[in-house]
Image (cartoon, rainbow, N blue to C red; front, side):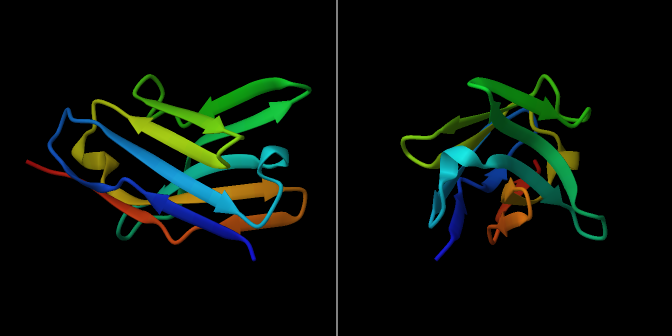
Length: 118
């Protein structure tokens, strides 16, 4: 049974930091590209960051809106992907979702809420 369980969300003041975690099980984690998406109320879900291993090299990509502030990382031994979020702004408020993808296999977590407000 595939599971992706996000944690680490919460309420933070502008300029603050949070670290999201996504614990995976039920599939070969190291073989999958892992991503974080987010969806704000009334908006479409958007890709935040992706991390994948290609030929032993780790590649990461970020949305322009978070580049330089967010960092995605993974620990294959723990089957966990992280999203370190710094310098958070109110526009970062959203539900954050973990995604695992490999060819036509596509798995989603239930999400963790991040609210940036003073």
